[in-house]
Image (cartoon, rainbow, N blue to C red; front, side, top):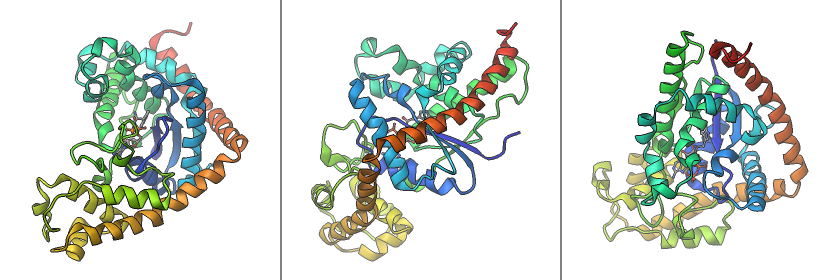
Length: 334
Ligand code: ADP
Ligand code: TRP
């Protein structure tokens, strides 16, 4: 039985932002000390929505550079591109035959991403969580660090593992992976609308802090970030109904490694202008050095390609073994 194996993925769709960093990548960096880690650039997930091919290539380099810049060590961890390991697509097909249509119909992310015109969405966007289950179970990952938006997909992954083990009478072949969701950072919200999550796909640049933002951009974005006219309260309950305020104070608390209560204490009774200056300072301290490192790593794309190639070689070894076992279990191998 594998005890401590992590797999997680980020789509190489550009514009990595504070939500991706606090919700996922920063957590990866902490977990690499204790776990055997597989960190994947989910390019096959990215193409469920049309991607310009040249842009996709650039985004793969950019996202890998961001992993490295944030402190993921390529010597300790396996960093690779999903499409470089064919096992992902093959296991996804097999899981398409295990999962039930009713399960997929409940997935809220598809509903959000497909919007009002579901008939025009790609079939890939619909079966996206099946590929995600394949990503995880191919490596028999025990833990999956993600933001809250991915929780439902992980539950589906567990359902697939349970049904597979039952249908083919192979108890414990797939272990059930545990989500690792850090409550405080599980959902960083848009700077323009405290009810929407911060996202790469938001049309407004002012909705997010990108990892490559300059000092000035951070200052401007925080200055323009939506707040309300009330003063900063002293109690967490008083943030109810004040989504934008809660989000900004929450971000500062995370950056200062404080509880929300402690962050409120420092500012209670004050207005947002002083608070915003301090928040900008903390963001600049954390984000600007990462942006600079991303630029440095991007100057040597061959180094990144080599890291991804080495990662894919190692990932393929594990993937091939799992697929061989799955073929045997299903009666696909003669
Ligand atoms: P996006 O949702 O911006 O398109 P991805 O889907 O590639 O980005 O997400 C990569 C990781 O970042 C996932 O683990 C996801 O849960 C996390 N994540 C994305 N947005 C946020 C957010 N606003 N707050 C917290 N975590 C987030
Ligand atoms: N679907 C995830 C996202 O959009 C990215 C992803 C793909 C992933 N495969 C994964 C995350 C496997 C965790 C495990 O954020």
